[in-house]
Length: 227
Image 1: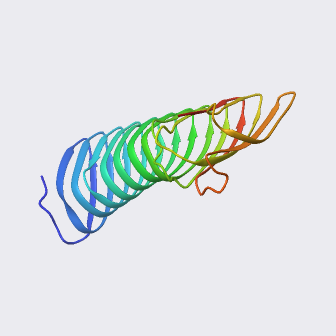
Image 2 (image 1 turned 45 degrees about the vertical axis):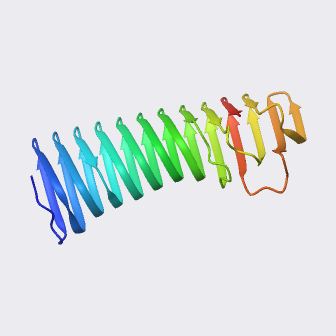
Image 3 (image 1 turned 135 degrees about the vertical axis):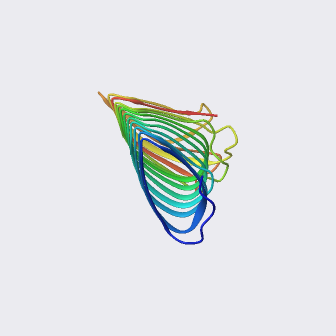
């Protein structure tokens, strides 16, 4: 166990465990075949392989991980490069994930950028903006905050499910190729066309003068928007 240090730190742990109260400066970490936990951090640059890492309160983190378990309770700006991981995040302001073959759950996030392949992502609450670029991936957003920003969706062989029971107004413009786009029944359709395998839809809920927007390009997948 390590007490809190106001300085920067450099940790390299293999086949071992550690618990740290935190550092006031930048921290560099390599963790493999072990378990690690930080109570508070300002800036973490780390690598995790075949291990488990818990961040309780982290201002900024840049993590490269594989075959590991990550749990981030609270973070301001978190970047994750992930392969074959199990990731759980609770409350993140800005989250960027490049994930392959990973299972990811996020309870609440303000802004999210997700590049995913062969992965599963569940978001409990999306507050503001999100961008998705996915292949062979399932994405579920259980709730979107009313007055959200912009959600950009690009997917191949990917299913998107977006629940927005609290959203009062939004605009959508989406196209699909060999896919499906399902929208709320009370959506006002501005433009809609179908040509063989191609499908395009443009519409709005409540008002077309809205700052909340969904843009999607789907191939061989589904976009389901539910209220």
